[in-house]
Image (cartoon, rainbow, N blue to C red; front, side, top):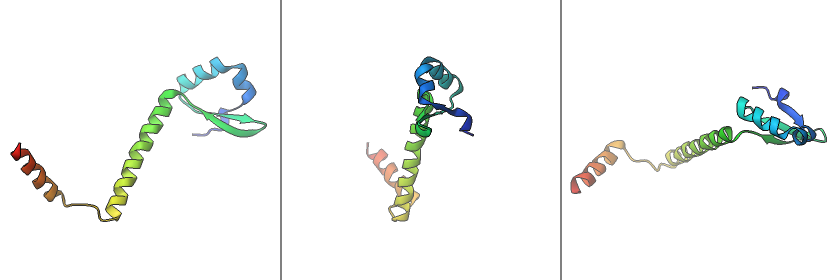
Length: 91
């Protein structure tokens, strides 16, 4: 996705806030806000933000799992299944 068409100065945001929010919600594309010609912020709709946060959480879980594997903190699946079956039988 190219963001070059989604760059607006802060003055545009101030003058067209409602329109900008409607556009963000409809198109689900982030908007880069500039101040004095420099990119200062990225604006996005709530649904896209939530999806991004969920994706980041899943990636963090995967990274933690990879760290455990690298550190040798793993058990053979057969041992885990045996332990779970024993636990279930005890209940």
